[in-house]
Length: 274
Image 1 (cartoon, rainbow, N blue to C red):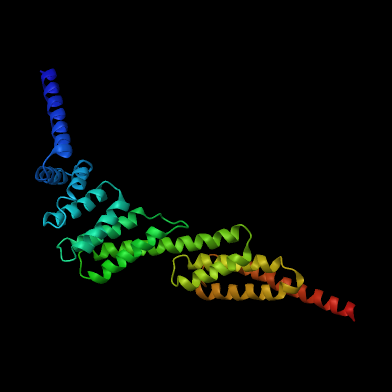
Image 2 (image 1 turned 180 degrees about the vertical axis):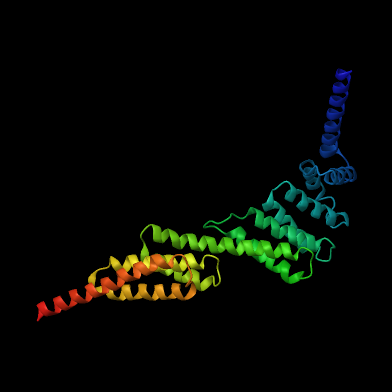
């Protein structure tokens, strides 16, 4: 009995595959359209896509094309090919701006950019595209039922960009390029006001200034140590209750001692010259 069932299933399987290939390669366009829609509705997106591709030319300019373009974009989305999904959603919106599916396409197109963008890296092209897409969605559909989700994605994308800039500055600090680190942290704090990384950015900016000042040549030491004290004051003003304050207080004492030592050295040099 089991052998009969298995044989029947194999016949059905090969029969369905044979029918699919027949329609795909030699079928009438109306049959391809019917099968593509059926496969799409069964969530067999991978099989539906080649059929949709065959229909682009024959149905260009026809009413069915609106549905074909949307289902093509949505199929790529479900197949996790987010680059093509975002492309086809954008194309759908441009071609069918009055469609009832435009709002959904705008959201899924933005989400496709979001899903294809890295958590953070030097190249944030897709992240910027996703930001622009979500910003446009939020402004266009402020009353959408998806607005809360869109805002969450937008916030996460902002954090990704902040993380990228913060990591660049942090890398300068860890590799001992303190001048570059100070500049990078200053730029970060100007461009990302209210960032979740602000405390660490101010903290590492001070430490970069400290290292630069404490290890500086004599004719630059005072200015750099005083700059470090300014960096300390900015951190303390912004985060007076920070757990890092004890460490920074100890470091500022070392700076004050170094300034005293600097003045003594300058005085000695002045006396010797006289």
